[in-house]
Image (cartoon, rainbow, N blue to C red; front, side):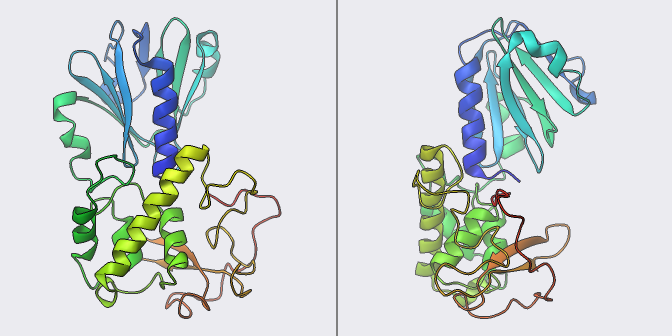
Length: 285
């Protein structure tokens, strides 16, 4: 699932292409919006909110979307609109005289009043990429359930918005915290450090223009400590990085970790799926 940095880049791309321009037309391919007419409305701005996108239009109207696992928004010359629109996975087409924005495999698509955006994003915790990020509130949210694992608490968008498995696994490794540790066993200062590191990594990824944990432009796709590196040697100790499930269905996820640097094997580590990914495969997924 795209994380906060990828959604931020998507919002920026759409904003640059559409902001200030009037839509010549829109084709929203979900039943509830099939008859919606956005033509003639000017795009005010496109902004991210955690993993959500808010496309704000004139007259107090917002097109809300969520990418979920496979979704994307791409911008193309408007002359390609008809060809691109033939794909059965396309859920939205928005076009100006010069550009067409194509929403493919979107997980959610809604129209709401801009003044009522809380209906679709009001449940979210503080956004790590928001310039006005409320760190104290995020910390209180994450600490609120001491029995829950620190990973589940960080992945819960109601606590803090924008963190996914990448920007949870990497800070946990950096601070030598086992992902299966209950929140109540951690000092609040440790949790605050984890959130600060996650925010720093997200901001770096936005600045660099790709998902990164170092912010350096001279590293390859293996720019990670543990995420996506199952079976490969830990960059600190050489132990093979491992993968195990965390949480319960339907929120169950997988988490990468080093058993030596992060305090032992996961309780759900059954020894399966511990072989490296194919050579050259992008490791941020």
